[in-house]
Amino acid sequence: MELKKNLQEFFRKNLRDPGLTLSELVRYTEGWSCETFRVGLTLPDGPREFIIRKQPLVGLISNYNMEKEYRVLKALMSTDMKSPKVFWFEPDPAVMGCPFYVMELVPGEVPVPPMKDEKQVLFPDEKSRRALAGDFVDILVRLHRADWRALGLDFLGDPGPGKGAARAQVKYWEDNIRHDQLEPYPVVTQAVLWLRDHLPEAEKTCIIHGDYRTGNYITRDGRIQAILDWEFVHLGDPMEELAYTMDVGWRSGPPDFLISHLMTESEFLKLYQEKSGLMINKEALEFYRVLSALKMVGMGVGATKAFSGGNARDLRIAVFHYRTYPFLYVLAKTLGVV
Amino acid sequence: MLLSIENQFSGIRQTLEEVVVPHISSPYVRGQVIAVMEILNQMQNWVEYRSDLLEDEISRARVVISSIAEALKALGPEVREATGDFFRERESLEAAAPKDGKELLELRNRTNRLLELSQQLFHKIREIIPPEEKANIEKLLGAHLGYISRRNLKLLRPTLLNKISTGGEEKK
Image (cartoon, rainbow over all chains, first blue to last red; front, side, top):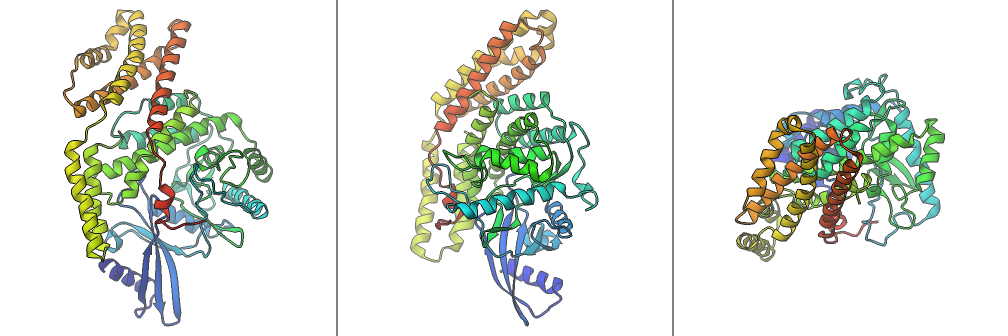
């Protein structure tokens, strides 16, 4: 009750309407990190709906920064990027217990990929799958082309030229894992040693969404309407994003192993190269493939730490922590030891 | 085991009590969930870490650690002295005699920490030891990491993650 009352006050203040009432507050079950709510408001001129993205008390990574995500989305509103419009950021934990921001409700649906052992095909219609695949690459290229300096996104931390982007990411994920791990993982140590020895040079520094895949966008009428879940946004090497998106965990099952259930690996790389004008650096992709596997382990280890701390009253986190084993297996596989 | 058994039992009990039970309107269903809490509470003292898995991991890690220890020793007394902590911890672990599953788990963790230190030391000396020794250690290390990753993966049962994500509803 207190939460609803606080939020009602929040919207009354920000929409400058003391008469509005909060009629609905529904928490979505999707999303394993930030908490997402749909809010229904009743105003004199009719109902309105918004989405709230709230920082979790604990989640898959230790250092959530909702303001960073909000500022990026705010900046992208001035571009042709398919990102949701954002309205307000509230840093005061007095309202919802943690910082949050409010964004538009984009009508449509989020296609949720089936698990690998399920026989279901996510996009059975060839024509609509191709249309979505085109959108998927188009939007990614737009993001990577965006002038982050002109957009004022320097605050994300320029990793610098050359090997800076790769070095920064290895350090970020190693630090996260070391901070969160409750037991040693020799395969992680092996991966970090390998990564440090194989840092690639970046051709350019661009905005990296960090979790670009099917499951993190909204579709309507067979087209992508908005890219969601920006908590891993940072500046980095575009090859990092491609390798993550191509990760085995986000692909369809055999025989095609489609990238994000949309297109083959060669189609994805060819289309990206054509649209972006960037050369695909195979060595960098190999490096970032290992880094992506390390990142997945980082999320599993983060969930483990979160649940062990006693603050995560969310059994989904306890379930997710078991995914660390497949993630460690994939990491071992990328290192060539299985 | 990523999370301790104690952590998992207490976390599940607390979440059911604080997050789930208050939202259940049916007294019967509420009672069923409280029964789950009670069962978990009682079960905890009858559950222990699987010693076969822990012992297997420890003995296999020791083989890799030994091979790196031999390579370090062969580099002479200066290297032996500079890596004194490594050798002392190795001796201490070999002398350990765990009394129960919890102590065995701690021994497994200490062994893996020593393995990590071995990996770092090997990384430093790999270009100054004989190539065949380097190849042998790499083979042993790779085989060990691969074996443990495969073994742990096989212990997992099919997941209900998607059902959890959608709240149990079928979704396209």
